[in-house]
Amino acid sequence: MKNIFCFIFFTIGSWAFSQEIPTTTLKNLDGSKVSLNQLIENDNITVLSFWATWCVPCINELDAIADIYDEWKDETKVNLIAIATDDTRTKKRIRPLVNGKGWEYIVLYDDNQDLKRALNITTLPHTLVLKNNKIIQRRTGYIPGAEEDLYEFIKKNSN
Image (tube, rainbow, N blue to C red; front, side, top):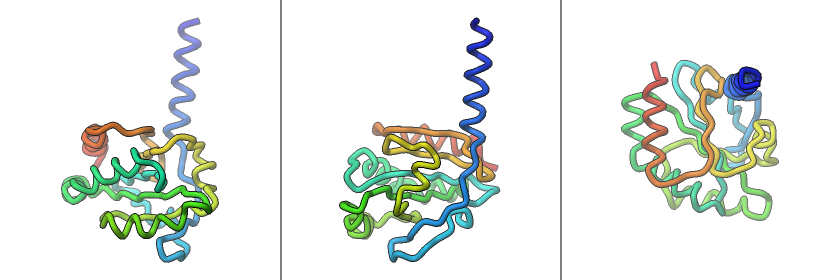
C-alpha cells in the first residue's frame, strides 16, 4: 500500500511541476495586450507572481522582492512578472498601487482570470517558478523571509 501511495504522489507531483504555461494574452498597465509566452525567457528562470490589490501578503511579498530584485537579476538573470488577478470591482486600483510602489518588474493583468483558472490557482499570493516554460516550483502564501528561500531555489536552478 505504501508503494502505491508513493507512486501516485510522485506521478501527480511530477505532472504538477512539468505543466507548461498555456499560450495566453494578458494586459499591461496601459491596457495593451501582451503575449505572456513571449516574455518568458526559456534559458533563464522566470517567476510569475499572482497577486491582487486587496491581498496584503501579496503586496508584502512583492515589496520584499523589490528591495533585492536588482541583485537577483545580476546574479541569476531571473525575470519576475507580477500578474494582478483583481476582478472588475478592484482592477482600477492596480495602476495607482504599482505606480506608487515603483516595482522594477513587469506587471500584467489577468483580465478575466483565465490564466489563473487554467493553472488552478485558488490561493493568493501564488508564485510559480518556470524554466523552459515549465513549472518547476509552486509556492502559496507569504511570510517575511520567504523571499530568501525563493532566491536560493532560483540560484540552484539557474544556468
